[in-house]
Image (cartoon, rainbow, N blue to C red):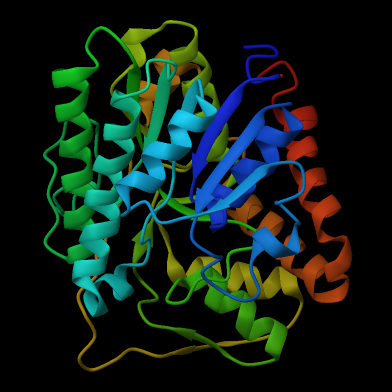
Length: 356
């Protein structure tokens, strides 16, 4: 995998979002020519602006719901690999704007696939969906890639539908050409996420403002994962697809190190401990929309076939996240270098021989 992204043209959708901005930084570090396509950053502040992600990439504002925009960008730059992260990613927002959620997450994904279909230079694509694409059984064990897809809430259903579209295009149009894979990650946390209705961003915003942390569902169990761990998985998967590994053109889970469930309360209390001050309060709503109570992810397949594993435990993931927000809170002008340093430390300390 050494130097696999060096000098390579990469199309990255959603590069102004939380995960997308981190991936854009990492690809810059790897020497890739990054072509970003996204809407304006969804929040203010945001990691894209704070870490000055636009420096060194081709930054394009556009909507993946507009096929002509996606098609023209692919035809102009002829990327050899596409990382598709653009999405409406918030469960509660999907209840408020279901049509927009389906338009972005389903039709937008189809637009990207269709643009790839008409560009023979695209050799590989990693399409990011969600761990919530599985039919919710409230199982105590993790979902595997061959478990039934489903989802009754709009967000989960949209990600399930995106997975079906990816599988259909792969079987119908890419069997002998572009290697297309989908990636499903757990609850991703990390510096620079200011999204609404997410417990870790809500926690960090409350702590920075000196407020009590509002917690809706303290006993909800999620597969917590630091942002650099799934991105490491996406980059590893992309490198194998580029090397001609059509056997990797399928669905992949990227989950946390822990087998036991880690609930929201544990995460919030750890964040308060690392921050050094604060408290949380139960903020449940009487007519709150239903959310999954128990969600776990099995990543045995990625471990055995990709050689991937998460490098951070849930508590070290929280620590790295709080460290970023502390740095942003005290010295926001220096946060780009801090973000790059977290990426470099991940490489040097945890996987020094991978993805150069």
